[in-house]
Length: 104
Image (cartoon, rainbow, N blue to C red; front, side, top):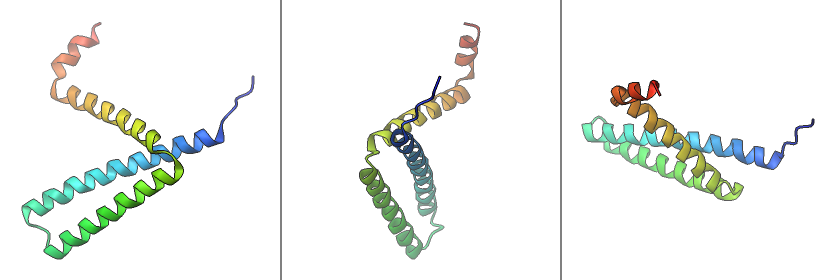
């Protein structure tokens, strides 16, 4: 039995996963930046630099996805990650509901 690996699909899959993870990190950074802005711990200059850096990252990620043809792959990975996070949060917030399902 031989294993046939399509290098193109493998490359797109791995690249899609990497970009999706970078997007998750970017989203976390954006949330943290908003919290710091709202709390007033950033100067106006820091806010401007942070905003520019996040916009440049958005542009770079969009460009990579477009150039590599992985927009849909990244979306699929993000959707899957969102489902996992939703399940983990639900288990943390509603443990009694999940305890009922454990016995099934």
